[in-house]
Length: 181
Image 1 (cartoon, rainbow, N blue to C red):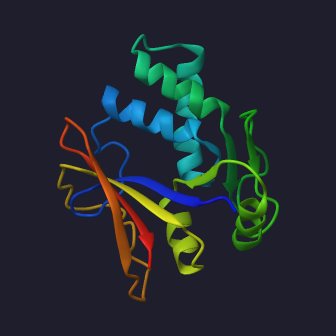
Image 2: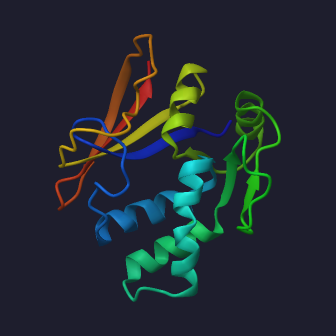
């Protein structure tokens, strides 16, 4: 069975804001490698629309190898979008989910292949509540934001996790790898 991995950037105070992190060469390379070792990534509408930025980088590379490589890998990976408002998606490697979240994820996990990633705060919360996430990869950036979207604000029950490992970056960001007990 394939693993479902929640991978997301956040600040020390627990906020998810893509503009608050330190997106340097080292971090782009890490996420390019992560995407390259997965078959699909799940997004909600808002995060998906933010990620569409990478289509422009594929067409007009930045000249920074790690950023451009990330864009190519992001362009290639299958993106499954959960949305009640989108009627279609234009990105060739994306599709709208045609079932509810639990059904879609359970079927994906049963298929052969590489891991499945989830990168939207709302989906991470929903999948946590359903008990479907196998691993959390929380990249904590050395930033205190003070406000914004908190990752686990709608979790009402205690969930104990086991720390598997950590990975540090020269920027001061650290990835915490956890699995459920």
